[in-house]
Image (cartoon, rainbow, N blue to C red; front, top):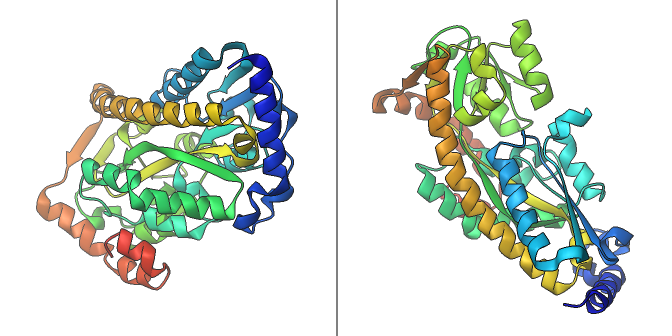
Length: 345
């Protein structure tokens, strides 16, 4: 596409976005004018996350940007802010920074959106998926599509897919965890999710909601006994240097929506929108493959640091599932029939 045609198409689509493209949503987004950075060339695209540049999520952002930049050349200007914590922001700031158009795109664990969009809490339910294959199929299918629609109905986002944060495990400084009884009285950091808080209450622990920026200081100070994360996050954040005891509990499977500032995205030429969607689909496969390798490498790193990893027996795993059973009954009173059906509840 020539520069002139690209600019003309961008301006036309931008005008359409302002005059009623969102009218059906009923959320007031139709009144938001697309920023000039989204309707004039070069179209500026600022992608952000909260991981070091070498991390799989950061590499996946770069993969998206490289593909788009290669196709459109000087008509787009792609920049990256790999770790927003480096600028003094918190991980929890990413949603509003994108919704307000300060950033064009970011990823963030779905749990961070549950205050604004409570329906996403269903994805936080413990032991919702038995394995990675079924979890991915759900997020790539109607379950993930419905969650994306619920997000777009409540906020100025365009959701293009889901990165894999994967199954999460428990680490702590006190003792090995084989059963829920071993967690009694432990203070554990959780994401800002009522479902996650309730899960660990049922397991006998004392949950504390902390942003990622607050996690390591609390661990270093000894004011926090435990945390839960994929093994790769545990090593990326340096937690394994302070926690000796790790349990492969697989208690939550979390995904990270890849969300765009909707007003900007919808103002882009269709050719750019289509290429961005294709780039995101490609990067999801790329990121998931990296995640598997990063988990394997992290387990090696944990053991190298002197940590132990408890692999639960089937009987021990069942004790955790049984302990959180009340939360499923509670969920049936919190979520609508469509969501419950998609979650097989």
